[in-house]
Structures are given as structure tokens and as C-alpha cells.
Amino acid sequence: MQSVHGRYLHIDVGTGRTCFYDLPDHVHQQYLGGIGLGTWLLYQWCPAGTEPFDPDAPLIFASSPFIGTGLTTASKLAVLARSPQTGFIGDSLTSSYLAISLKRAGFDALVITGVCDPWSTLILNNEAPTVTPAESLLGCSPDEVSSRLRQELGAGFRIASIGMGGENLVRFAGISNDGRLAGRTGLGAVMGSKRLKAIAIKGTGRLPTPAHPGELAAAAKTLSRRSLGPETAKYRELGTAANLAFFNKMSVLPSRNFQDSRMDGLDALHGEALHATHQTDKNACAACTIGCEHHYALRNSGDNGKTVRLEYESLYALGPLCGVNDPDIVLQASRMCDDLTLDSISTGATIAWAMECQDRGVDLGVPAPEIPSFGDGDALLRTIEQIAHREGIGDLLADGSRLAAEQTGQGSQAWALHVKGLELPGYDPRKLPTLALGLAVATRGACHNRSSAYEVDLSDQLSVDAAIQARVDAAIHAEDQATILDSLTLCKFLRHCFDDLPKEAAQLFNLVSGTEMTGDELLLSGSRINELKKRFNIEHGWTADDDWLPARVLDYREDSLLNPDWLREAIQCYYAARGWNPDGTVPIDSGQSLPSRIL
Image (tube, rainbow, N blue to C red; front, side, top):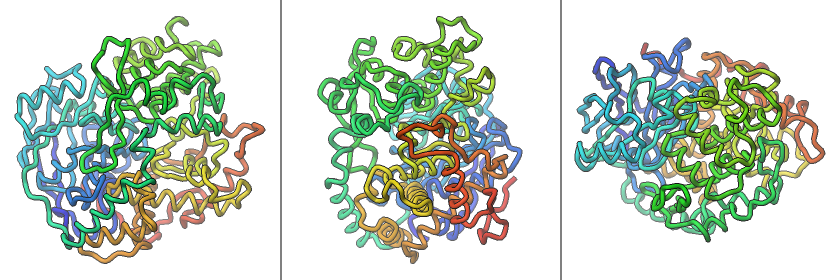
């Protein structure tokens, strides 16, 4: 197996003990890398009974065979743990030079266990790890942490760190590096539970050599050229913020905590308007030719001169979902989430839950004036700060909408919009039935990124009255294809640059690794990885009741394409198509070779 080191490093940051473990070729062949490799390691290191904040709970960083090969966008690092937000698999991706540094350091993945005393920084200078005190960095934003550590350690280090959200164990805190966030499922809280403020990695070793460097260079050049074609024009020109106007027009834009599917008065918040009034520049991730990251100026915030990167999901969650249409407020809120390392989707959705509680007169244990209201931008900003510091109402909201609603009661569970504890993304599933199925069964909770099934609904691939089996097949294909991209660590914005993604991605894998794999076999790897995710969830308490959608999006509405009976039948068809039992569990004799336990 070429283009990999064939080993990973385990560090116990409490004791300082380190150990290298072999990664046999069959692991990369069956689980590829990235999310797939991380899932294989998580299953190994996190057996049933291991709580997310336990000292023995692992925090995993995994690279892939594609990193460092010259393939465009192949710079994503997978981060995994048992999620403190959902209790199930927590996986996220972040794009930066950190992935390349980790691979240059001489191993394919990093597994961290233990708890530091005191708060510390883990420094990896190639294969030499040290743990140093970091109490002076507490309270610092990721930008401040990176600046201070590079001054102290010297050039060449890439930094991953947590902000106040991670320090205070906000259950939806993320991990930041180079301005990018591994944002969903609360991995920053896991890092905070280890009292690990930052990880600094410097890799100066040679990257493993691909199997066929000449042919790979030619294929990489072709893919780079495709990445600059019409399929990615939207991302290059306006970024994902362009989705807002389209989704509002289609009435699939969740607003006011999913009470509405569109919102008036958004003209100043559309991607085109932001581009004209606030955009300053754009940027690209490491090894990326697309450059989708658009930066916008902050105004009237006391942060003049600072900019913020903005994606559609942050725009939706901190804007329409909370009834806010002021671009300066939304941009400032997004910047605050980045600085405090909070997942902007869960932040906005949990605050929107509190706003509806205010509307309905629910007692949240604080004076009513302290509860934010829909459309109150100043209250939105104040509440974000309170969440990160766990102050006032923020202490309740820092656990996410599911736990906040369970603690509050008074019927508030009815408007906590989540699946498995992970708040819904910016697509109203009432008109997107294929996506609705994908959200219900997704192993990490309500996630559009682990399935692109919404594309089926927003295109003419299936008619409105398409058979359930057709939607099930489309959802499974989208889920497995997304898993392939996440495991090879290719950006999903490339997916339309391929004529036949599984076949062409398999050809790239063969050039990189020196193995022989077909497109069908690559899709089988995607299915295998998804099954292992499901096995992990089952071991950690999953039941069939967890594969469901909030009642609000299943309630009768004239323009809705969803109802409970349809979803129930679709889920049963999904289980059958996966070869799982009718209760959603995975047969013991499914043929999957499971990882042996380390602990």
C-alpha cells in the first residue's frame, strides 16, 4: 500500500506515554482514510461504556492516502470522538495545512487519550511529542493562540485549538485551525475535557510516495482543470451564501425555528448583496484550486478591520432561523462563533429554541428579559457570549436544544429541532423527502454533509410522486458517495466535476495506492464504513426511535411532502436495502471484519 505510513501514534496526555501501532494494508483498502480510518480507530478505542468526557475516551485525527499527492482539495483532516452532544459517533472534517503537517510528521493518524494537569499544549515536532503548560492561553481565541504559539515555537508549526466554548465544555464546541472549524458534534468539548488547549504539529519528513507518480500528476492536472469549470462557479463567485436567495424562493429556508419556510426582508442578507456591500477578499484551503472561502467586513462591532468567513449554514442559522435579517449582526455572530469555537448551526438552532420559549412564555429559570426574542440581534450576540462562558441562560443552552428541552420540559421538546441531539441544517425537509430520510437515519444526527440527498429533491432526478424505493436507493447512494469523499478527504464541491464519481475516484485511489479497486468496490467501502458507524452507535445505546424526525416537520401542512407513515415505511425500506434487521440493528453475520479492541 503506497502513499501511507502504515502506522498511527497514540498519546496519553495525562501520563505522557506514547506508542506507535501498525495500520495493515487491508485497513486502508477497506476503510480508505479520513472519516473511514477514523471510524475504524474509534470503534477500536472507544468500547461501550466509555463516556465522551472519560479520560480514556479517544480524540482522533486521521489523514488519508490522498493528502500531499497534489490532488486538488485533498487537504482535509478527519476528527472523531464519541459525541458529547449526541452520545453517538462524532465526526467532523477540517481543511488546512494541519493535515499535511500531520502526515509529514510520519504517521497516518493520531489518537489522544488522558487528561492534562494543568491545562496544556500538545507539541508534535515530527515524531517527538511533548506536553507543555498552557494556562496563559486560557480565554484566548484560536487566532491569538496560533500567533502566540508560533512566536514561542517558531515557524513551521500548524495549530489546532479550542476557544472558550471548548474550555467550558459547551457540548457543540468545535476545534479551530487556520480559521477553519471541525465544527459539528462537540469535538472541541472532548478536547476541552482533556484540558488540552491546543495541538501544535510540525512535520518536516518526506511524504510517502504514490504508486504511479507520473500518471497521478496528469490525473491531478485534469481534475484541477475541471475544478475551475462551471460546476464550481457558484462557489468561486459567491460561495455557499448564494443558497439563501434560492432556498427562500423555493420556500425551503427554515425561519423562526422552522415555524416558516421562508422569510421576508432578506434582500440585504442574500449572497449577492453581501458580495456587493461587505465582501473584502476570498481564500482557499490548502491544496485547493476552487477557493470558495469568501471573507466579509465587520462593521459597527468594534472590530473594524477584522473580517469573517461565512458559509450558508452559518448565514441561515444565525439569520432567518432566529428571525434576524441585519447583515452586520449575522456577520458579527458568525465571527463570534469562530472565535469562541462554537458550531454555528447548533448555536443558532438552540438560541432559536429559546426564542420560541420566550414567545410561548416558558420558564427557563432566568428573568424573562434575559431570554432572547426572534429578530433581536443584540440579544443574539449577547446569548452567544453567554453560551461560551456558561453564564446566565447560556449555561442551559450550552448543552444543546435536546438536553435544554429535556431539562426545561413544559412542552418545549416539541420545538427542539434535532435528530439524535444534532440540530437540523438549513434545508426544510417538508419539501425534500429524500433528504428527510437521509436526516432521519444519518449516524451522526441531522446532517446534510453526510448525505447529499437534497440534490435529488432540488433537481428533476425524481418526480414528486416517486416510489419510496427510488428515494431509498438515491439516499443510500448519496450517503455512500459522501462517505467516499470524506474518507479520501476530497471536497464535496468536486462531486460534479466527475462524470462517474465512484469509478473515477477508484482510478485515482489505484494510482495513489498501487492497489486495484473498481468503482463498485469503492462504493462497497462507503457502505462498510457506514455500517461500522451504525455498529458503534448501537453499542453506545442507539435504538430505532433515534432514527426519526422532529414532530414539527412531520405535522400536516398543505405544501408538505412528508408524513409519519411515509417516513416509517421509507426507513424500513432503507434498513432492508442495507441488509439490516427490521429494528435497524446490524446482523452479526453481515460479513464485516470488525476491529479488535485496544482496551
